[in-house]
Length: 95
Image (tube, rainbow, N blue to C red; front, side, top):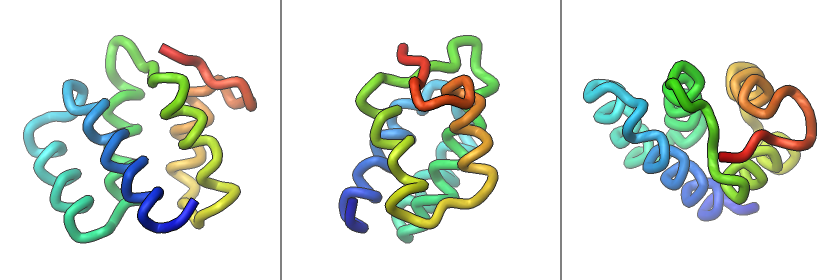
């Protein structure tokens, strides 16, 4: 996954999580995406979806997200949030 694909998955995640984001979080997420801070935007979106009533993500998006730690530097919070959403295993919960 190259930087363009990283941007694509970040935009897809933020768009999917839009309903779970507060207005301020959404504004921040889109600014972060716009300046290329994809990791921070994804953490913000994952935090929002984690606290939502339906913390699931589409299977293809989850598959792309679970590959990120293997192809890009992601911070510990990203890894922890993703593990919480996937049950901490290689078989993510799909929604």
